[in-house]
Amino acid sequence: MHVTLSHDATSGLAWVAIGTGAIALLGLLCLIVFFAGVPVFGPINDGCIALAGLLSGVLAWQFWADRTGPAPLLSTLALGAALVGALVVVLGSALVIFRVTGWVLAGFYVEFGNALIGLWLLRLSYLAQAGGAWPRGLVLLGLVASATMVLGLLTGPAIVRGIDAFESIPWYVNLGQAGAVGWMLLFPIWCLWLGRFASAR
Image 1: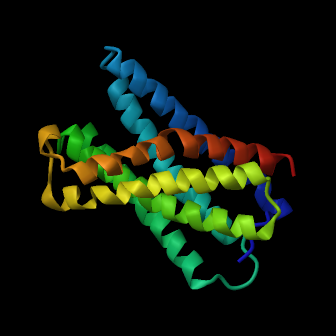
Image 2: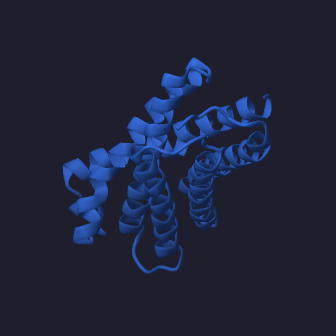
């Protein structure tokens, strides 16, 4: 499976990548404003997280649709992880928006979903590194972002246990929440860089 971008695919992929990155960074900005004491930005942040998650799934699918030749099993599994992850992110956002759960448990869903997307990004960045067609910095950022995002898999036990109180979070789950640095900051920057790279082709 190659990750060189065809001429027909670059325009749509560039816009999806840029949209994903911009919406994710907007969500981060809304979160900062929310914690600064403006409650209305909380739901906006949740909506941005859900939309960025969905667009991440679309982005993964676009790479899949643009492949040449049969896809290896690992790439197929990576795509599946990204699509499931996108749905889990949306579910997590919906849980807190509609007050089905508290923000703690909903956040675990978001972390776990983005960790699954991180698995896809890790596979993609590895293939891009081997192919040599992408800028080295873009590949390196993808590897760092994905490795950080994958830490979110450690929140899985908290979802199974239904932990929804901050004081009940085990230490290893707190470590998993460090994955937020990946999906809230590093991955959006990677998306914007990817979009710029794709649009210049």
